[in-house]
Image 1 (cartoon, helix red, strand yellow):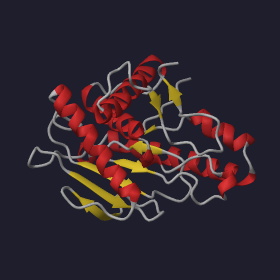
Image 2 (spheres, rainbow, N blue to C red):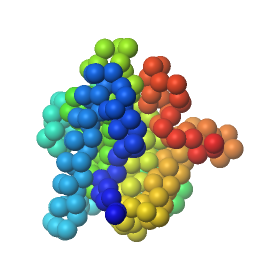
Image 3 (cartoon, rainbow, N blue to C red):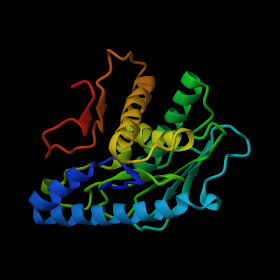
Length: 242
C-alpha cells in the first residue's frame, strides 16, 4: 500500500507518532493536533493539485517578491499581511526569519543556478507564520510556506520544538519542495518520495552554506539546526554528514 504525502512537512510523521505515544500528557495532545492538522492540509493540497486555477502565479516583475502574513494562531491562510518586499524588519522574530530565509533561498537559486524563484518564472514567495497554536511543523502547501510556533504554548519542561522559522535549513528544505513540484513533480512515496526528500535536504543545507559562506566540508549538514529545545538530546532532525 502506498501512503500519499502530498503536502511536504519537515517534521517526520514517525517522530510525531512517537511523541503522541510516549510523551507527557501535554506533549501527546500537541503531537496529535499537529498530526491531524497536517493530514487535513495534505487533503487540501491533493484537491488543489488537480485544479490549475489554484496554482500560484508568477510575480509580474519577475524579481524577488516576498510577503509574510500572520495567521494569529488560526488556520485561515494566508492571514494578515505584516511585511512585504522591501519593508523594514518588525518586532516579531518569526516574521523576520521567514522573510530573510525565503530571501536567502531565492538568492541561492538565482546566484548559484540562474533560477528565477521557485518556478523559474519569478513566483512570489508567500509565507504565513504563527499557524495554529502548538503546531510542530512547517510545510510548503503547493502555493506558499506555512510555519508553526512549536511548543511555545507548553510549560518550559514540556517544550520539544522551537518556532520553525528559526532553522534556515528548514526554510530552504521546504521551499525546494516547490522547486521539485515545478520541475519534476515526483510522486511522494517509495523511491521517488525518498528522492524528493533527499533533494530538499541537500538544498536546505546548501541554503545555509550559502548564507554562511561555507564550503561543503565546512558545513555541519544538519537539517533542523536549532529546532529542538534543550529538553531534547539532539542537534537536529537529520544529519546528512552522519
